[in-house]
Amino acid sequence: MKHKFIELINDYMSHLYDDALSAELDAAMNYSLSAGGKRIRPVLLLTTLEMCGEKAASGLSAAAAIEMIHTYSLIHDDLPAMDDDDYRRGKLTNHRVYGEATAILAGDGLLTDSFYHVMSDETLTAEVKVELVRIISRAAGSRGMVGGQMLDMAAEHRQLTRAEMEEVHLHKTGDLIRACFLCAGVIARLDDTAMAQLHDLGTKVGLLFQIKDDILDVEGSLEEMGKTAGSDAQNDKATYVTLLGLPAAKQAMTDVYHEAVELVSQLTENCTSMMELLDYIVARTK
Image (cartoon, rainbow, N blue to C red; front, top):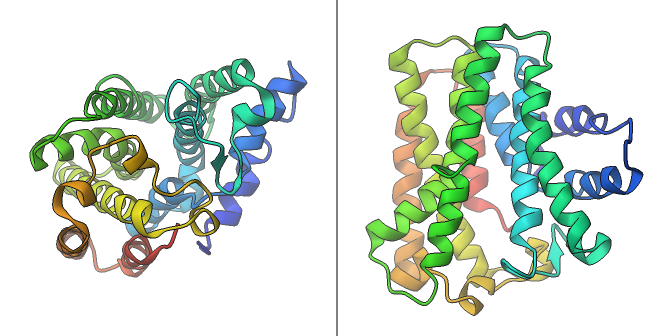
């Protein structure tokens, strides 16, 4: 994805690990953090800030923290005990380069450092920083992403209902995406009504992103996606495609897209950049 905020985000994150306590650990963390990717989560956060009339730069520490957490989750997801993948973002997975032990510690480091990074941002008030850490930690932990990953593993080799599958995806993928919208709202100091609207929008965007991921796992290739396609079917995971079939999954994606567009239009008239992001999520090939 080409977006005006990606260079800003990448430059900001390139300086996170300049001082090494362990050169190998820092190299492993930087290997995955700098591997590229869509940067959709930090872009969503900064775009939401801009949509709310705030300077995007005020959200860089929170955006970087969320990307650090997302990257840690990918490192751990790819481990032999989890999905056992060889490629991520078109490169060998972290444990294939640095070994399992270092990969585990690299993920641990990125997760823990993310909160330290937010709390060290001197441009934000103490009140805002505490609320950001509350939102991000809730979204990343056992009641959010990690809990969703556990539900996802428990769902393997089972026939789920649509409601059960959406519960998995809303936590596994959706909670961290929704946190991007909520963090932007906190930094922009929005009122409770606007925060509730951002909560609903973030939920829809997380669902939209996951449905598209499920479709890509069927239609994509290693060259397009940067990781092995078809892994969901190989691991017998519950997805929108396995439950609904490909045509119905695409229709579900279209329906959620229109719901998200409607929510954006209710929030603000300054919505061009967010609409472009929604279009990108639907049209992306990786």
